[in-house]
Image (tube, rainbow, N blue to C red; front, side):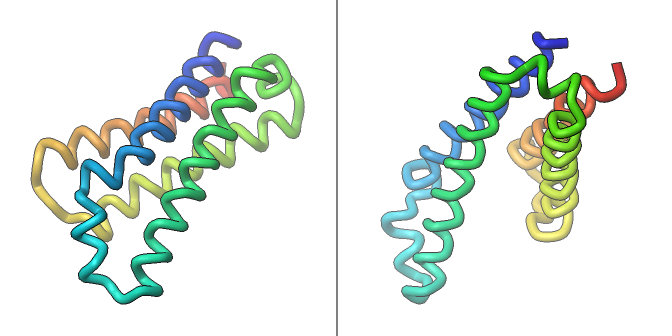
Length: 123
């Protein structure tokens, strides 16, 4: 079971790295200039908080794998993360209705997050 939780940590770490690259991937230096100052700030602040969150989740998964699947608090943490990815999957369909292979890959990765964090709870 610890192996699955370590994989959850790697998964979260990689999403943190992915979000660090948003400024470059999405050309935010130029693209965000089209937004108002508050909206530009909100986008970057939210992204920075997601980076922190993903790295925090990774650290918890790497540091406390046994506790995550054997304690009530750990199980709540896993459920919460699975629900996070469920919500992100639903939001993909609500806010980003683009029929492109990159969107389908992202959707698959979000569903993978649901499964990874739920798996220790059902095995």
